[in-house]
Length: 551
Image (tube, rainbow, N blue to C red; front, top):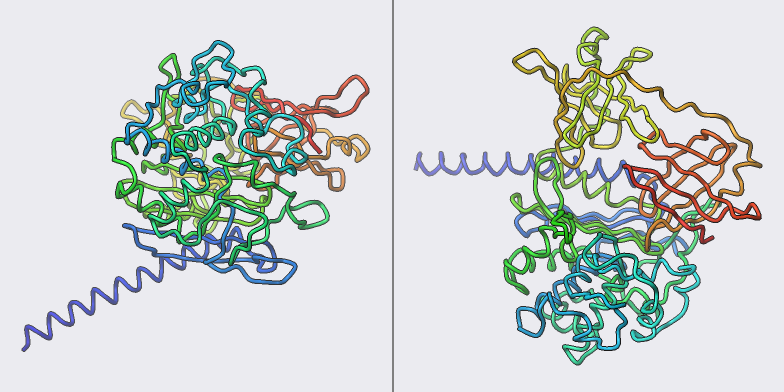
């Protein structure tokens, strides 16, 4: 009897401890969500975290309808936007396993009249965005185009005669046209519509009862309203005919159904592990260069943990899903406003779920200037980046040599560990056996920097411009298909906000060139012969990208 009671007390102790730990972690999750969604009367989100295929956290915040003042619920249905692409990719891999196609098949085998300009474009090229076909979301004004219903063949006709952006396999460029063509191939091989194929072979099979192909006419129980944010406040999202996203972004779902989907991937319910490996482990260009995008999913490394991910952004929607392989942790977030950066929330939650939480300003300690001085200097990192650590006004700061030489404050977590505010980025300083200093820089992955003898370049100097000069820059610019940057002017200040990301200020270097302080980038606004602003050029990471003004 004594042994029985001892065993019972031991089990009760374990249960009590486990319950306390779960409660503490749930509080951490709640705190992270509250940092991003602190207005109960604004558009919101639904969020789910699963471990070993089972839900451990499920949350709804904000409003599903502002007009009707309806609170968000975990059962709400959202547009998935580009998360749709993984469903399309898996459908293609299912057809490959059935022997109905090869990924090396030319697309003209299935769409004989498609003009390839003498190039061989394969199914593989469509899947990993290396086809060179022009993305239809980058043709014309997307807001106007999105209002018109099109059949699948009419949609293909809209972009098929456009010139190629590059030869197949030579570059990676995110491309919605490629996934529309994959949808066409699914229809050719199955003898059914893409919509019916996905619903029959995936949604029905996996009991995803709240998932479907998006439709503006049908009544959908628990479907949220979609919103965008303007200077005046929240507005209803721009109209989008659901015939336009098709196999690139037209599916709708819930967080609970998305867990069923992820479990099907994890358990090889629909495709073999060898097929899934093709989707999640990136791919290569013709020259052998590795790219982190596979088939409908991108590689991810979160604080040393390997996984895969995809996000989505469409009028009034921001979505993101993350799966960490070794830890068997899945995090998905669906938001009903394109103004919300749901990806920042899911990344933070995923890191916390695997016991590697990003530090916050609550973790910052006070450190003497003498302690900070020991790390002052220049460091050259594995990717060639030079970062300078220096002290100004009693605060340790970091500058990465770039187009902007932007300065960031870094805050001490210990004598040798420092964080960037609200970014999840850190430095870990140390000294090697020969007394040389080194720094481990951690963002999405770790990079080691060695001490070098190099003077620090000057930081960017800013000037003040009047509203009269700034006002013509206001508007919406298309940086990539389904990815826009909203430029707004507020009291002699100019702000930018990209789809699904936070708003930040940019600062004038001259009347047309601006730089950011929160991230190393530069923007130059371009005018036509009549002086009208028609685009801007983004300089970031050694690359130049032109964003056309669409509104």
